[in-house]
Structures are given as C-alpha cells and as structure tokens.
Image (tube, one colour):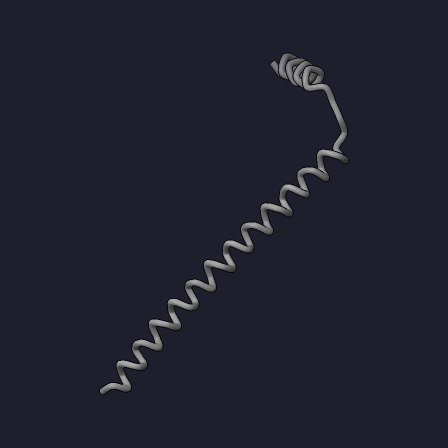
Length: 68
C-alpha cells in the first residue's frame, strides 16, 4: 500500500514540475515575442515612407466626397 502512496506523490510532483516548467516557458516566450515585436515596429518605422497626416486626411475626405 505504501508503494501506491509513493506513486501518487510522484505523480503530483511530476505534474507540479511540468506546470512550473510550462509557466517558465510561457514567460520566456512572451518576453522574446515582445522584444521581437518592438524591434520589428522600430524597423518598420525606419523604413516606412513618411507622409503628412493632414495630407492623408485631405485625400480621404476628397475621395469620400467623390464617392457620394
């Protein structure tokens, strides 16, 4: 009977270890994804064409007036 208790304890310990491991991996993946995302945004901002927002809004308003 003591062997089944040990097996139960082992099962609980393995489950807890795997849950902790999963949480560690999840945190690491989130950190790396955030870092890569920020780097991608910075790179896109550097290579994206620069336009004046006012001119873009004027063009959109003009197109809306044409579509009416």
